[in-house]
Every structure is written in C-alpha cells, then in structure tokens.
Image (tube, rainbow, N blue to C red; front, side, top):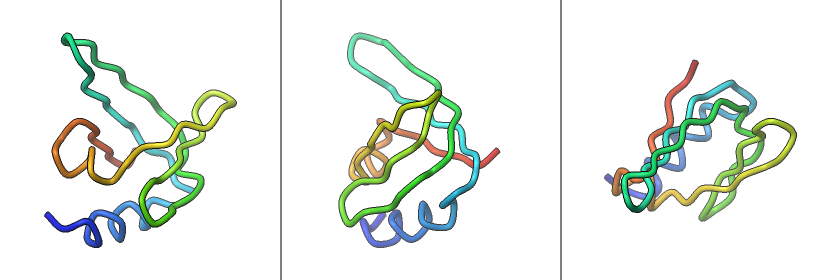
Length: 70
C-alpha cells in the first residue's frame, strides 16, 4: 500500500461515521466509533465521545489501525 492511497481512501470518509479498531501492545485491542473530522498530510483525526483522537496513516498501512465505514 501507498501512503497517498491510504490518505485518499480515508479522505472519502470525511464527516462520516466510522469504526476504528486499534491493535495495541500486549494484546490490548480497542474499538471506537466516531466521525472522521479532519485529514492532514500525516495524520487523520476522529471525533469520539466528545474528544478528538489522531491516528497515523502508517499505522493503517501496517495493520495496527483498521478503519471501516458504518
């Protein structure tokens, strides 16, 4: 995968509700539901439960973060 392709794909979800799965260290996995609020050159932000969280496109490429529309 290419960073530009991932950025373009996530830009399609701008202002839409998405589900984000984060695979962390030591088998800690988190699932969030929120709205993609902004897309920047190296990160994208998601509005989740009244706060914003940012995620890297590189984490999407390596599979630590999975994003899918709802």
